Image (cartoon, rainbow over all chains, first blue to last red; front, side):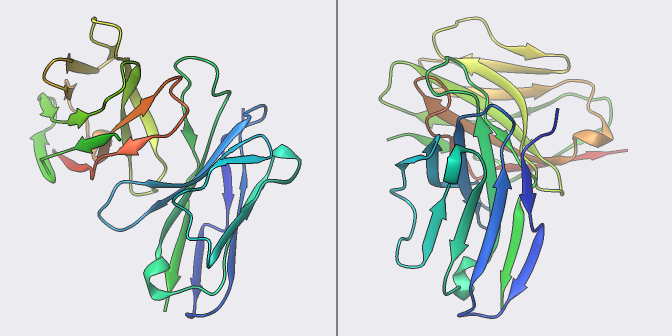
Length: 116
Length: 115
């Protein structure tokens, strides 16, 4: 069974440029997460989707970040314009169903962003 | 709000020996889950072990086991017979309700297994 797939794995952009990250969750997983991991830190949640609905986006910097999950499967996270402080690893994750007890969250390999 | 604290930024152990990584947490929830994730240089977060707070029995997964002290809000990870492939960052995390609401992570412990 394929895991969570993310692309691109690595991206270097100049500040003020836009960037987008794509995520394909594990088949059948209704819940999708985007986390950001800064150097030397643990991941922090940016947004959580239940199917197509963003149910927790309280940590998403909405002035420059946007996300969508059309049709409740793949998701895209966009940053426009990027700032130097956005350099981080962006991790996508998915889980089966929030109503099931003891769900495990599975992570992709992450998209490494460097803003120069 | 949940918080997770890992007080050991780095640790090292000799191959085949045992090492314990510490984690403390704070939550106001009655029903919560605790996790240890491993993150190798590839950056993929891999679940090592999971503990339901309502279960008193400590979780075990092969060479990995936890010491869950609910009253003390402590959740340590013991790795027995350490292997070179165990070298990685280890993150302690907590979540509420069904375990898929929101993971809150600690800052991680860098573990190096020496040959």
